[in-house]
Image (cartoon, rainbow, N blue to C red; front, side):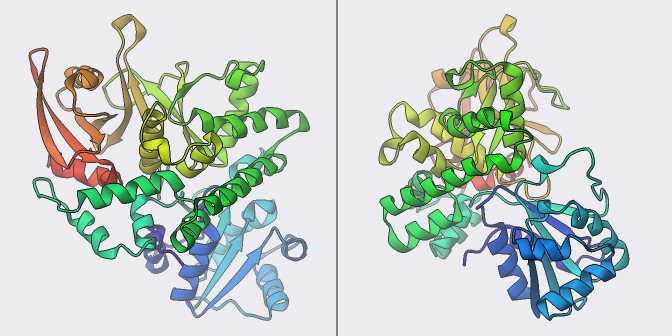
Length: 443
């Protein structure tokens, strides 16, 4: 069973003096259930798991009218007693029960010593105005497809991974070619745990495609679970079918995927699919001043859940490192990696573009890191290909400029239009460390 980065956060939660019930959120099949079970087995004397997608369990526990009633039902149904301090109570697919969701607030008040983790894939999409969320009485953590570093850990490349975690700016790294080759494998298969497990154990791309096809079909089948009406299904299905084809590219709601549907209909469908964490809309910003204020009417950039699914839906595999597909797919994998850093809170990810009246310039991504704005361009080291990054940097000397490519980790100096720019150059295989490397650069 794979180690996941979120396990470190689970261990902190376990020992926290201000611990509250924890809800782990993420799309289906990203490994929520597996990692919670693993954490429970390694850190508690017993794990009691309630799965609310099972009709018999939902029928029993959904009727609980108090904490004591819930725990009594738990004891009778499983013939186990939840013991504070030594038991982990795991409630899976909690979005199936509005009642149990509302009970979580009372666990925090009445049984604060009992460790409770809940997981939900379709939670946000199923909530309506009648739900009473226990705001302030629960904590949230987010889990995404496996990052490249998690993939290396799963492949037991422990020594290489440790050396990559220890690289400092100015140090020479002897294993860049090996790390790059492994990253290219990661780009092909992606970070869905079942897919990675199959590839690591069998090494067969046909098996990878079979699993990805099953996952994609399951996401389409899920539509009826988070659709508010039958008439919405066609819009949601279009977004799930076509969204991955737009990964790493700009898109508009109007005529999405060549459809005749109106902007309002597609906008609602895209927002719903975003809520269940299958995609992320990256909005444009034109200012370089903080706080970041997005331009809601500009085209958005599509980042899909996982690069492996994107490759499958686009029917692109070993050739993805070259050709026209390369540009947008590298934006997808970098965007996916940046988003995966949002364990505590979802990362606010944007792209920068000049207002049209000011000319044409666009930087692939920008984020706020502490009190700094970071501009991120996914390009080779040619000055002509980084005009947009220089344009962004020329507006404010405090902006941190980052270039991500296959080149080595280093700080570069460029002179363009009479100004000098210092760029932090990060290789693709170190994208997981981007915030830390930015700190080294500006420190």
